[in-house]
Amino acid sequence: MLRRLLLAGLLSFLPLAAHAWAPALAMHGEPKYGPDFQHFDYVNPDAPKGGSLRLSALGTFDSLNSFILRGTPAVGLGLLYDTLTVSSADEPFTAYGLVAEAIETPPDRSWVKFRLRPEARFHDGAPIRAEDVIFTFNLLREQGHPIWKFYYADVTSVEKTGEREVTFRFRPGENRELPLIIGQMAVLPEHYWKERDFSRTTLEPPLGSGPYRIARVDAGRSIVYQRVEDYWAKDLPVNRGRYNFDQIRYDYYLDSMVMLEAFKGGAFDIRLENVAKNWATAYDVPAVQEGRLKRVEIPHELPQGMQGFYYNIRRPVFRDPQVRKALGYAFDFEWTNRNIFFSAYTRTRSYFSNSELAAVGLPSPAELALLEPFRDQLPPEVFTQVYEPPSTTGMGIPRANLREAGRLLKEAGWEVRDNRRVHVETGRVLRFEILLPDPSYERLVLPFVRNLERLGVIATVRSVDATQYIERMKRFDFDMTMLTRGQSLSPGNEQRSYWGSRAADEPGSQNYIGIKHPAVDALIEKIIAAPDRDGLIAATRALDRVLLWNYYVIPHYHLNRWRLAYWDKFGRPEVFPKYSSPPVEDTWWAKSAEN
Image (cartoon, rainbow, N blue to C red):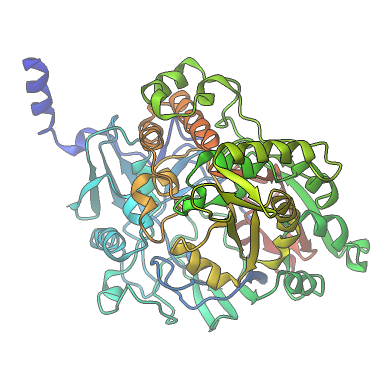
């Protein structure tokens, strides 16, 4: 023991330079692309520059600062900023140098050092310095959106350790993802923001360093980005073949159906369709028949996460898991899929659906080792059953399911009086509101509401505009809502904000459900500390089981392909990255630019 302590003490005095610099860092294993790679496989390195791209967004915006909780930021603001590193879209999680030309970290990843490129510049010509990186980190953690506190919770210090070098040190404990998370940080200019109030919304175009700058803003209606001709990083391998449009414009629409009709009329160029009925029926127009408007389905291998009806368990009515379980029997997926979605979807059975991270079968020995310490705090089904959401024949009213729901509610202390489900002790009626960000979702929700009514449960539906919805979600001001919680192939620190106890009381966090569970917290830390891919999979599957069997969500459905419609005036690479949504803005190009 004494020898180990002495050795540890000696090692703490070794210089950081004892570790080798590298141009890339993988979460597990080695990077796909070597130090001499010329471009990513999913780009056309010879793509011409020029032309324009018109896109759409739903709702409105009132801010050009996307780093804070206040306001509704415009879409596309990420185009303004360069990050320390950039992730490839055909690997689970690997970071390649952008502002940073090299990365250094020890085997235990207890710290990370970035060496900045001497040519890195902001749009005003000022160099990107180590001081800007330190300024950005402190600014985000002190005044930024609450999510940054969770992302950077394990960072103990950041300091300049060389002329163009900055080092982040982490608290003891395994957090292999944290060096990559730090690398995703956009670098903000200290000389610009030190004279402005970062905590407030603004419509003044901010100073950036990325491939685009803001050209025009029509507050709440549209925003136009202009490609930076002398962009400092345009010839780096990570950017070759990317950012080809001279101009990218986003127009805002207040109604989703108006947006669809505008697209078919040529008002904008590309649409990612997420409504099965639209995909099946709304594109029977001359432009499609004549080949001017293209439709493609692109398979992918991205986890689809969990879409469903999300409970807010801060509300007393949803604190009982038995009640949450019972209400799930009122959602008839089979009928909905057949009659509303043209049988397009697969029922979701995991918070990490469409991936190897989803729990399968009964817990493995590795999962049991993680779950066993919490056996007394977990539903016994976590250990003994394979989770399956309630199913029906899909023929109409799910009578058998509603009988089971009624039985569960009665056991939980809710009986029917005068056709209303009433708590036997308090006399309180079981009622709640379902909050929606778009009226188009009502066709999915209303059949669910009718089945709840048959149980004596009163559920009302409220559709609000996008801005109001965002503000209410920031304050957790809802009973139930319809959400999609996406996931990556390499889950980690973000899980704290999704499900962690500390996030449950933090306005603006993404723990919308309000989960405070010691097993969930512990499993999140196991995911973060996973030493290898097998360990990550085991910890993620264990977390999946705990979330599923606590009935925090009524699962919906998912699709393992993108449905993309676009006007035939673009070129696109032959290869689509399998771990990304279609990268239209940064890998496609205008055919007019080919001439």
